Image (cartoon, rainbow, N blue to C red; front, side):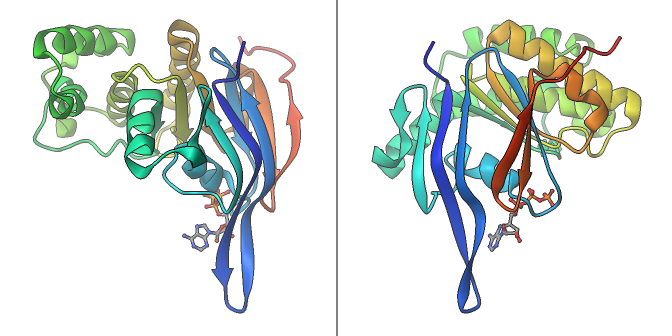
Length: 233
Ligand SMILES: Nc1ncnc2c1ncn2[C@@H]1O[C@H](COP(=O)(O)OP(=O)(O)OP(=O)(O)O)[C@@H](O)[C@H]1O
């Protein structure tokens, strides 16, 4: 199977006084649909930078990014935006929900902008809220939801566009242990169910066995990739 996401010798440099800082240094990474990869490493090692280039939000200084067979560097700005919309789901640490919208409306806002038939999309949103365990709170607003529930809305929203690649940046940073575990389990479940190629940046090493492989970054480089030995109970 062709990888859903490939990074081929990807570098990202930022000006740093008279020299340059290599946020990413010749990174190679490949992930297929249905795979759940965790990305760990010290602060400043390049994890968020890797997600940003993979999400096509930031252009790398060198190297290739291929999403579902499309070489991102060969695309125009408009084509890149369309590819991101159609293929990439992004889940940030903070849910960034709009305070005035209900849970189900948070999922539908993007689809309204796309001009899709509202009925189909409403059904899809309801189904996704069910998948993430929130069917009972579809009409609640963010302030009426717990942190874990808000993160579940965030995950469901990222799935609305049926992404091939799901990029997740520290989804558990604001949550307690129990909620953190249930969020990582949910990400495992949606990766299996929707066959997304999921990359999760995390500091929570105890949940790594729920993922298929662990990649460690250091100084902008991928220093090793491990396969977790066992699933936790
Ligand atoms: N916009 C920017 N301009 C200049 N340097 C940047 C920029 N973004 C990131 N960097 C630098 O690139 C390097 C990698 O940063 P990055 O945010 O990718 O690390 P990280 O592993 O995600 O860190 P953390 O775990 O703290 O979030 C760091 O040295 C950082 O200071």
